[in-house]
Every structure is written in C-alpha cells, then in structure tokens.
Image (cartoon, rainbow over all chains, first blue to last red; front, side, top):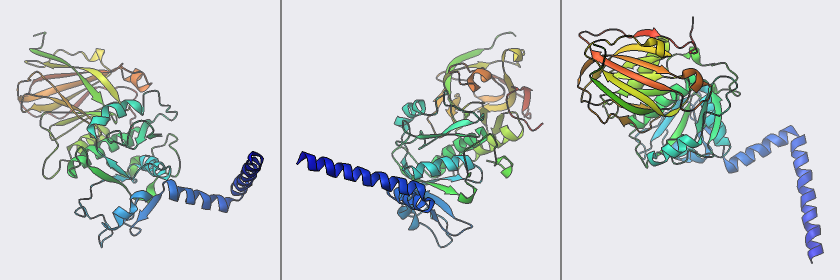
Amino acid sequence: MPLVATKTRSGALLFAAIAVVTVVAIPELRVKVTDLVEGITGGTELVGEVETQFMVAASAASQVRKCVSQRNTLDQDCDDLKFVMIDAQRMPFIARNISTAWKAGKPGVLTKDSTRESVNRRQVCRPSFPRPNGGQCDEFPFASTRQGGEGAQEHEVPARENRCQGGTLGRRYDAAGIRDGDDFLVVITHPSKIAPGPYQGVDIAKERGDC
Amino acid sequence: MTRPDITISTEVEIDYGQVYIYSASPWGRKPPSEAVTRALNDAEQSERFVGVADGLIDLVVPFRKSFNAPMRIEVWQQEPPPDDDTWDHVVDVDFDVVDGRIVFEPSGGFGSLSTEESVPSGAYRARVSGRGYTEAASGAEGSDSYQLRLWPRDADTPPALRKSWSGFPTSG
C-alpha cells in the first residue's frame, strides 16, 4: 500500500508540474488562471458608469452595489455605509498600492482602531524602507485600522501623494463619523488614473491641482 | 529681554510627512472643516512647507514619520532674538491659542498629543523651526527636533519664510 500511495503522489506531482509549465508557457491561459486565483483570493471590481466609475475590492463589491444610487454614485445614507475615498487622479501611486493589495487578497473593508495604531505605525514603513526614487513609503491596509500593521503591503510613492493621503484620511474619518470600532469601505475614484506601474521618481499627478 | 516667560518641553509624533498644530480643533465641525487640506495646499504651493488655514498650522517635513521628536515651546513678551542659524527650516505664521492648550496631531487620523502645561490664550505670532531634516530624510531615527516660539501680535500678518531647508523640492 505505501508503494501505491507513493506512485499516486508522484503521478500527481508530475501532472501538477506539466500544468504549471503549460500555464506559464501560454499567455492567454496564464491570464485566465491569474484571474481565477484573484477571484478566489482577492481582486478588484469596477462599479458604475465610465464617468463616475469607482473601484472597490472584489470582496466588498456586493456591499457596494446595493448602495449605488441612480446617478451611479455611492449613497452615503445607505445601510449606514461609511467609506473613505482615495482619488486616483490626485494619488495615482497610492491608488495603485491599494488596488494591487486588494488583488493580493488584502481586505476592502477596514476597521478603525486607535488601540492598534501605535504598534501598527512602528511595524510598517519604517525609516529603513528602501526608497530608491526619493519618495516615501505607503502602506495598505492603513496603520490606523485593525487590519494594518505587520503584513501590510508597502510601496514607494511620491511624498506629495503621501501628504495628501494623510489629510484625506483624517478629514474623511471626521466627515463620515468613522470612530473606533467602525467598519468602513475603501473606494478608489477615477480608477482609470491609477498609475500603470511602480513609482520611478516622477510625480505624474503633481500638475493635476490641489490635494 | 533675552529669555522666554514660559518654556514647555514635549514630544511630538509625525506621520504622512506632517504634524498639525492647533488650539481650536478642526474636527467635529458642521460642516466638516477643510482646514487640513487647505493648510497643506498652502504649505506646498507657497513652498514654505509650513501652511496655515483656520488657525491650524501644517508643519510639513521631508520624511514619512517620526516618533518622540523633541518639541520646545517658548512664550515671549515680544519677538525673540533670531536663532535661525541653529535650525534647518524656519517660518513665521499667525497662531491663536484659544483655551490654553496647544495640540500636536500626526497626519493620517491618528491620536493627538496636547501640552499638559497651560499657554496663555491670545493672538500670537509663531516661529516654527525644525532641524535634523537631512539625517531624518536619509532614514536616521530620532534625529529631528522642533521649536515653536510665540509672542503677542497686534495685527494679522502673512506667513513669512525665514529660512528654507535646501532639500525641499521647489519649482524655481
């Protein structure tokens, strides 16, 4: 019996190896498999029409769809939904960090938690974080949330975007009444403006106006 | 007059490259205050990297975060003698103390720290100074420190950049 079991395991391993080689070698198949994996572990979803379209984590999409008004904007009075908007037009690299974090399975709904922030802030985006392009470290999920801290995804972004994000979070927590223990949704507006690649030293949104 | 009437030594935290300094809180207002955004825009567009809006000062630094950074607060009877040579970046702005306290809040929606000792309420001119920027921007921890000097003002005056740290990006 042990011999049979070994043979079966070897066969399975051989089949898996052939499958991996096939997927890697055929681009179309690679994309389909990547989408399938993202659908299981994470991913993003676009909601609304082109002009008012926004992006959310696929895991949070069902919550969002029922709160989209006839004008294709988020209805703030729907189900006590609280949300923080990150504008990709002003923060394209931060929006990229968030969207790629979602694709990697990071959550789209976060929980504000001031008891975690002191620890979280010391665990991520430490001064030693490499910044080859002179930018600053950005993390997602935010350090001000229960989901932040160790394991958050860290990317280099322009310093200007980071400053803009800091003010956006504080202002939005206040305006939306997001208090300790409250869940809130993260939404990316103007998703077509998300940076197509990593920050390489050019602040592409600097001329797009105020934060 | 060569010494301040009041000196307070405290520590501040910085995040998202900024610390907000205020006496009257910008939070909890109806409609919500846009002071933090307007102060940031003022700081960047003026290239002073210290912005003001609705009584809030946005002190911008060239690095992401800092913990336990020394902050010395001084209250003078009149404008203090210059000490710009000992700082990297120095800006004068108007600042009002409304209830005897000054609050320092790292950007990003984090908790704030306020002075335990009282500062007399009143209309002040404030000199905001920072140093250790080069080291901190290079990744060194615990190298930055700050000073907030206050003296009474008779009239409102526009912000004035007295000394600029050379590492800040400028359009010029």
